[in-house]
Length: 294
Image (tube, rainbow, N blue to C red):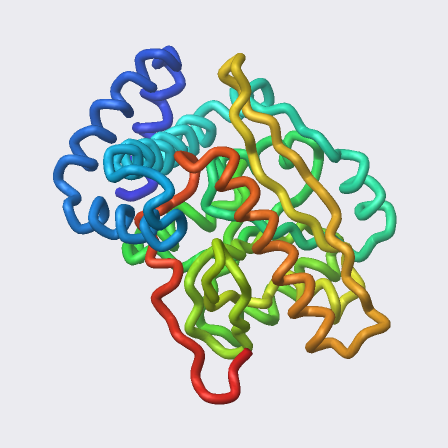
């Protein structure tokens, strides 16, 4: 039944012009925004932590609303691209493709750190069209049918997931992806309470951050990149892929910490440039260091 319903939705979308689909997504986004007071409050709190009194409450509300719509519409586009993957090839301009080619030719895979910024998942369709095999580390959907019957369907032209739990299975799958010369995509901008986290500077405050992207790159020799999609006036998005220097002459702990800080600094730069594209609804600074943590 899950397959049937999903395929039915895909069939409908295939015959739906994008402007009509987008207009419907806007309506849904407005409804979700209006019925989500807790998320709106979290967004204002996060904006206050980041900017203090440098921007007005009215401006914070405007950014929070834009962030909510960016996330919702990005997820809607993801559904559209699953149904009509050819559309994604035209929606994005890839800058830095030469870095990924060099990485592919080296045969060790590549680790790309991303943020919940703009169409952060939908942009991966562009990498698929460039001929790369893409795996993305993510939390397992709460709906088991959705996770088992849709996300893992090999026939779908999508970046296939590696679920972050159970942890052991996740680690094995990540190493396997790099050994097979695949691109491993991992978010680096969320509050993290798991083992091996570090606290790095983000908007002048310490934020608990997963070291996964830097750690996998260090251990395997795979190159490390950051990738963000920036909006263009044409309505398209520019995906900027940039290498991150990982000093393997240093002890692993020091090199991984420095690279994680560099990745977080890049996230902050992107968010400062386009504050309405990041998920301020997330409580990024929720965790505090425990004794002995850095």
